Length: 215
Ligand SMILES: [Zn+2]
Image 1: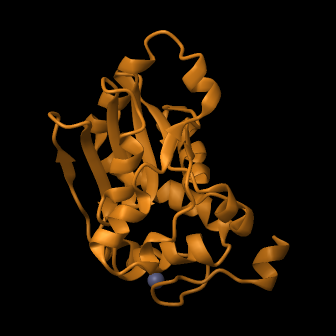
Image 2: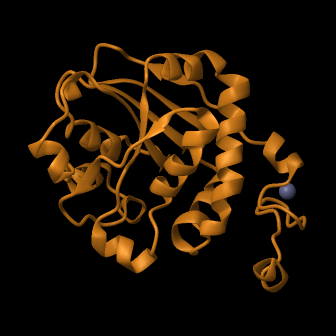
């Protein structure tokens, strides 16, 4: 409450007070659709909104302006969108026991920022979507923020082999881990290099989806 008095919330789209994204600006967002490709290691991905305008501003606020109090509002936006627009996909994930898992930040960036927005999103989405949550990946190499690299090839090289499964989960894999099903959660899907790199850290038979706010 106090924080609302000091920093009153305004819509990042139009400046209307009350919420980070007012209903009118919410309705103006460009919707995206499911990309399904079951023959690859990433069987499908869903970016809910096109990465431009209001959504781009919100993700920037979330990442760089230390506004972790944006999380509940974004989580509601994601859950609402999934429940209303992709009920079959959500049911598929629930029925097949998919687990939400965040794309991790490297610890040095985590220390600087103080939170990992993907982790906060995935953890808060778990009870709303009735999907399990597990933090399973770690980042092994510090990488520059993807948005700061303009060249696509450099951006790809920047994240190569930069993920692995968290150590104890590697050394004592629970039975059946290789056939497990995960949904990689991140804020934005740009070239896909981060998601592909994270996907390559899982055993070959893992079923993987990617869920991002925008793409
Ligand atoms: Zn607005």
